[in-house]
Length: 98
Image (tube, rainbow, N blue to C red; front, side, top):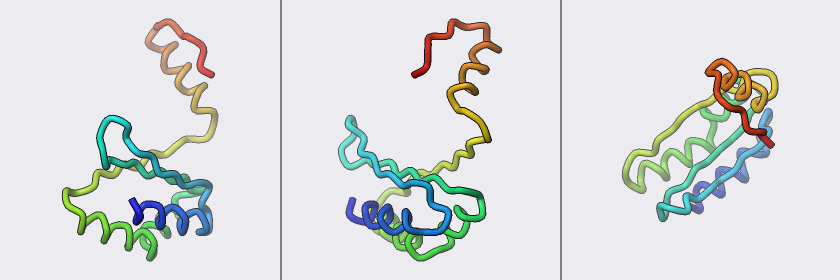
C-alpha cells in the first residue's frame, strides 16, 4: 500500500498528469487498483519509463504474484454519451446515466 501511495503522490506532479488515484477492493483484502490519467500518450509513456513507476514495479515484483495491468484510452468526447450510443445500437432500454 505504501508503494502505491508514494507512486500516486509522485506521479501526480509529473508533466501531463491529470490525476492519480488508488482504490482498495472492498471484497478482497489487500487488492488495490491504481488509476492514472494523462494528457497524452507521450506523457503516459514518459511516466512508465520514469523512476516513480520503476520503483512501483520493483515493489510489486517483490511482493508476490504478478500485478495485472490494463491501459484504457478514452477517445475525445463524453464517455456517458458513448455509452448511450452503444446502448442505442443494441436497441436496449436506456436508463438515465448521471
